[in-house]
Length: 93
Image (cartoon, rainbow, N blue to C red):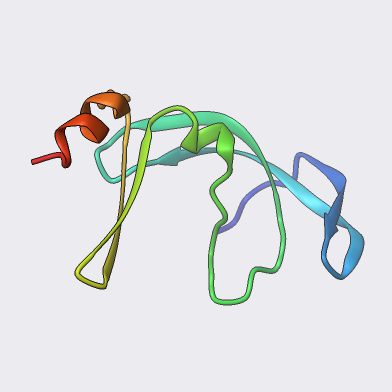
């Protein structure tokens, strides 16, 4: 990707801090939902391309299950699950 740097910001991490590039971006989810504009900071994340924060996760439903030792994750926008209904029914058939 060839993104234009919009500004610089101090990035704090486990190894200390450093001045890092910032970009203004839109993120398109697989269900064609477009989120943004977002200000993102460039960092080095071993084994990953992007770290999604609570600003995005908090706008939808994020679920993790470990049924039979098999872990699966799901995320959807817009939010559509009422968690107390899932807890009282014993599942989300």
